[in-house]
Image (cartoon, rainbow, N blue to C red; front, side, top):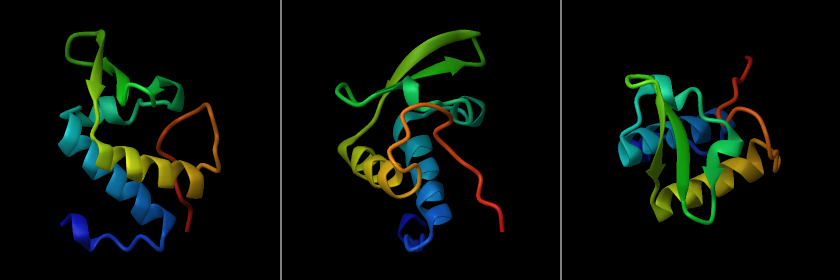
Length: 92
């Protein structure tokens, strides 16, 4: 499934990042959609997420593969934006 994304399209790059974060960190969908850029610690390779099940915050860690995809996504899609939601909508 992971190899089926067509990374020529920004929406596909975003979708790959979504799937990889879900698989790599174990965050829930409701936690994933709330991630903001300022919640990501790039030095520690961690994401500070709001745990909806317990109404608390927790830290999850991501792999080097996620780091690579995240860097491409930030450069190509977010244009080095520093704040705001991690995942953006694409209008057709």
